[in-house]
Image (spheres, rainbow, N blue to C red):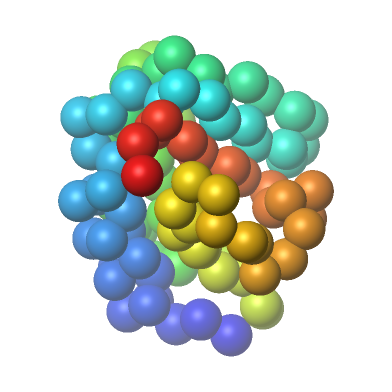
Length: 95
């Protein structure tokens, strides 16, 4: 199970990759599918074992659970698992 320090490290990494960028496409599938395209990431931070991504007027919460993880892929790179298994997909349109 990922510990709190892992979530803080993930948040710090995602902050450098996403903060200030507008999403070319994106989706969050839980509890129901939400289209995130066109939203700008204003902040990424951790609170305990929860990861928060502030998107314009929305706040996206992620919890790694028992076996969760975040992955970064360059355009065209093969995914470790099927994209359909990802609960959240964020694409800035950059490599």
